[in-house]
Image (tube, each protein chain N blue to C red):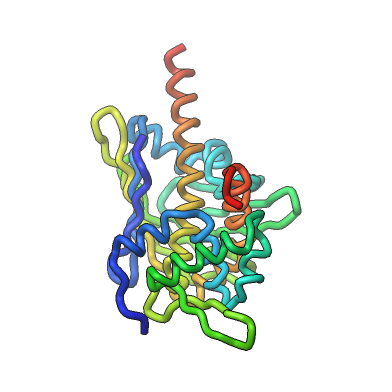
Length: 112
Length: 157
């Protein structure tokens, strides 16, 4: 178990889409920094900075394996629940943006 | 328009709240009429819903089928348990990935809020195994959307 991070650190860590994508990937299982960086159009040092923020927030842990530093979700941290909620939030947010547009179109059509 | 809020209630439920700038009648209709659902209930960008069955009455069936340009697809089936238009509906649904996920029991309410509607949806929280299955199926397009947002952001490297 990691020591409980402050709520501010956790929320700040979750406020970034890249970090949320990293957590979603780690919900699938352990991954090296290289593996985490691979799908992103950003540099490995930039990914390493994201990993540092997530580690300090107590959301992920790294272990040493030779020259590699594989990451995994911290037990008692966010685990796959947070990743699942984030997936749900993403899908619903986009749905309701489209529904806003549809409702606005209906209101306009009614006025005409 | 208001922000979506999403909160867990214990380990079993997730409560979603969202305000819409339209009366409950319009928001309710958009949740039951297939021709309307097909315009918005699509999840991440890039997906369409070619098949939408929503019988709109207690005992009625639900079947939503989604597909994307790569030919990937999945579907949802369900049954409507209660309706009280335009205030409330209760249904169960399950995703087929293609194995069915455990039933998700959903209570949706639409409450007049000024000239708009406050929608509250209380959903069953899937167990850890189901969450993992949904994450792996949602991973490709969910993360794809994150990457696209990222590519539009300059100064990251």
